[in-house]
Amino acid sequence: MAAASTSMAATAVFASRFPLSSTTKAAPARCSALPYLPPRLSAIAFPSSLKFAEPKRSSLLQVKASSSEESGAVDTSELLTDLKEKWDALDNKSTVIVYGGGAIVAVWLSSIVVGAINSIPLLPKIMELVGLGYTGWFVYRYLLFKSSRKELAEDIEQLKKKIAGTE
Image (tube, rainbow, N blue to C red; front, side, top):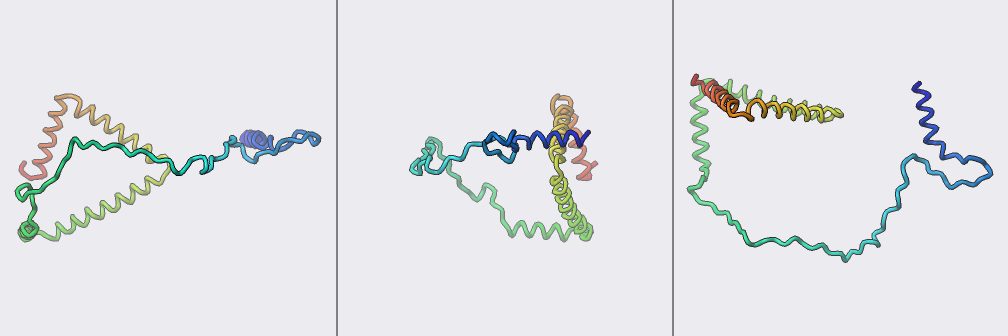
C-alpha cells in the first residue's frame, strides 16, 4: 500500500514534465512541483537616493544620572577584609571548597544537558509547554487566592528558618 501511494505521488509530481504527445509542442516543463515565483526586482527599481526620516526625539524629559559617595559606594578594601575575616572564621574550609566545586560542576553539567535537549527536534517546544503548564498550575495554586498566598509566604518563611538554622 505504501509503495502504491509513493508511486502515485511520484507520478503526480513528474507527470507534467513529459509532453502528452510527440506531435504537439508543449511549453518547457519545470523540474519541481513548487509554485512559480516571479523574478526578483532589480536594484534599479529602488533608487539609492531614497532617504528615511529619522524619528523625532522628544526633549521634554531629560534625565541626568549622578553619583554621590553616600548612595552606596563599595569600598573594595573593606569588602576584601570582611571576606578574609569570614574565611578565617570558618572551621571546615575543605567542605566549603568541595561544595563550591560541586556547585560549579553541577552548573556546567546542567548546561550540557540543556544543550543536548535543545538539539533534539520538538523536545524544546514540549519542554516549553511543560514549563507553561507548571507556571499556570503554580499561579492557580499559590498566587490566585489570598489564602494560598499566605500559605506560600508561610512556607517560604519556614524554609528561610531551616536554611538559617534558627528552627
